[in-house]
Length: 219
Image (cartoon, rainbow, N blue to C red; front, side, top):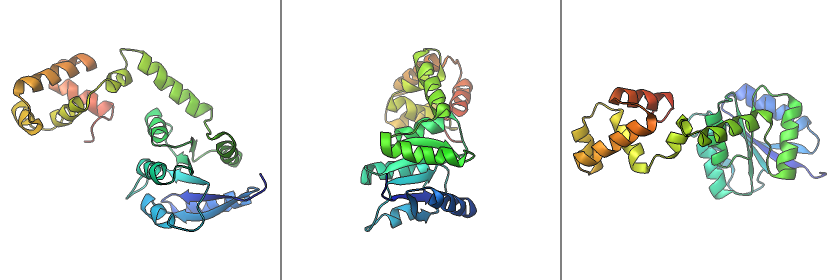
């Protein structure tokens, strides 16, 4: 790899972002093309001219987070590889970034050598998944196989069941929920009973607690 490969660094923490840029510019054959403090700024800098081969993308940012930014890149610049950068090693965050098009996931406390390895692998292989990411993904796959797991239950939810669940976590009565969903109260009863069975709960309170615990709703 003799030609310079360009990297875009996207992170809302100025000192960390600039420190990363200094580090990356020390790597042989790599150069930081530009920095951005948010997904919106990234979009503005992706218009015309030289484009990066890799976007090193923070997951948690204001205005436009890493998930939305990765999805935008996948739709508008599918040839550009995204390497997600985060302090979170939660499997939900990792899988969500991968679903939005990230080709790798690295923690902010990783050694410089691992970052260089991630760049090399993404360009050579098309992806970079270290032991931590592989372990988290495999845990999720195993959980999906387990019919009693939360992930398995969540994966089987229909769009209408998700809509009902969101409304059930409000203070609205089942009658009002039925009106908002443009269905009969009997249909709402059916959604409720189906979710009770899938989540192994027996009350609306249990349903709400399950939804909050598994981050199906934001409170």
